[in-house]
Length: 101
Image (tube, rainbow, N blue to C red; front, side):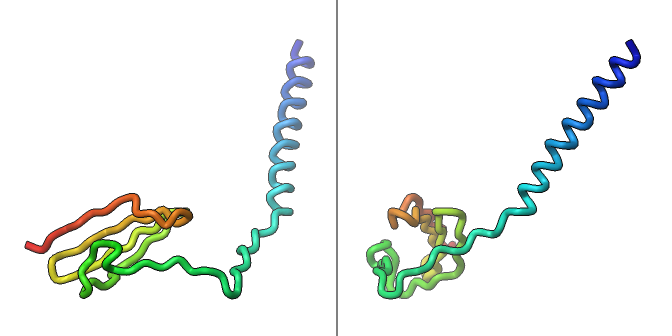
């Protein structure tokens, strides 16, 4: 009985090592994906401060990109506005206004 348990344990251990070895091998062969080439004269999506409902004196304070979502923070005399865009559709999905006190 002990011999059978020893054989089963060794077989299981070798199998687990083989799986992990295969994973490491596949990961070592992966090449980093090259960024997609940008078209030379392609259309660039644009918008204006008035289209976003911001005053003309607004300026970008910061930006953050997470996958397909872009958050832009604008500051003006009345406070700060954070606008969240869904990049593929260039649609505003959220807005937060913090007024100066």
